[in-house]
Image 1 (cartoon, rainbow, N blue to C red):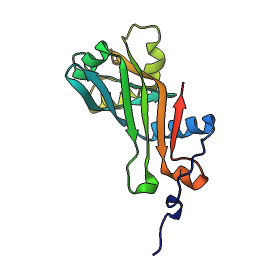
Image 2: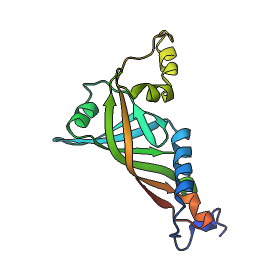
Image 3: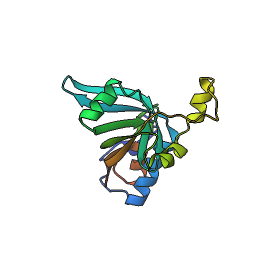
Length: 169
């Protein structure tokens, strides 16, 4: 029987990508998607919330209403996991990242916030909501700084690398 991706059969490679190449692949994934699932926890248990994100390097950022369950959870425990994935059309296309890290919410007057807002594409949201583009958002911005990332890409098997790669701070 013909097989479209014979390299998916047989033993799974175990070779690790060099760090620079792994970071490049993670950045490519972050740049090519715009939705993620945030996982936070509270006394009631875990909560997984889909949100639109932007990134600056390996950091992921998003805005949210301060009283939302995810923000309430992050104020109590700033540990977070973020899942980002590309559309799956078959085993060969499997590609995603699970980011583990901490979240910090930067108010508009925080010394570091301007650098993040420059990378945050708020303008399209303003246009969609008929808001004035000369009036930038005043919302707080939440930034997720990774401590480790589990990156999965089955296409790596073609090149002799393990499909699951680990990045650590």
